Length: 329
Image (cartoon, rainbow, N blue to C red; front, side, top):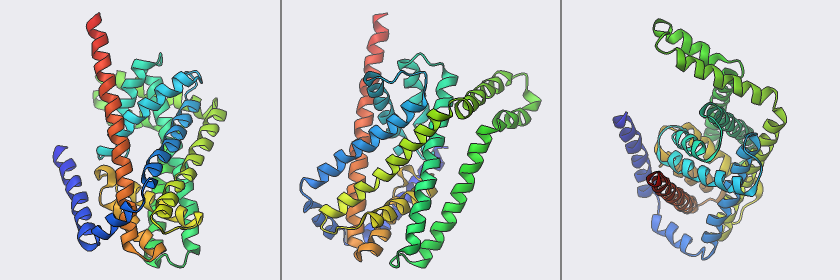
């Protein structure tokens, strides 16, 4: 497993090296220096997205009362989990166990309810992502500056991703996960009976979420979709302060195209190289300057590094506080 992680990281580093060698990175840095205080505004603007993601999860989780204190606690937990999601090559799932542990420490929810809530929240996120990407794909079709090759590749990627998401949702909705595990472990059923029972219980709670708390689920979907739409503001602001203002439609095309590439390269930690290359390519086509794309990629990485470091700092603080609490008893 360690070897696979190293290999994926090496792939990303090679892609990033190719981008650096083939681009005038010094010109990109000069553009970024010209942003002034704008780069700080772009970094802070991400907090809106962070709060929105937290609200989407809070609305979905009916056992956590809707209070400011609880929202703040969930926000911190999200930051810690997303920090791990950024660095682990597990398709945005590496931080979910961390979130589960922190939720167990901070709430009265049992582990099965927490797991079901995290599964439902991930489903909400990826379903709304598909909607966001689909709109972006349609906009690409009307944008003449997008190359036909990229448009076809985006269409194929979107189709594959959509089928995968549909399968993921149906497995939850129809309770197929426990059936699958039962068949895989039928020879060792006695030993793994508890595991199958736990999975079955989680599926039951997911079914309750989709069937009996559908208004909360729909509200969570709505908030998550708004968050994806708001994410285009970041691209818009970056290019505005770089001196290359674009339309909101063009910002949607760039962000959705980059997110599609990120989803397709989930096995690379942080999609390093691939995600940056997407900005380089898309911004190059829209603005006519690959250097601008490189600048956008660098600014985006600076923002991610800042918030990831913040998430790890919160995690370290919570760990020390938890250990001090244990020593008292």
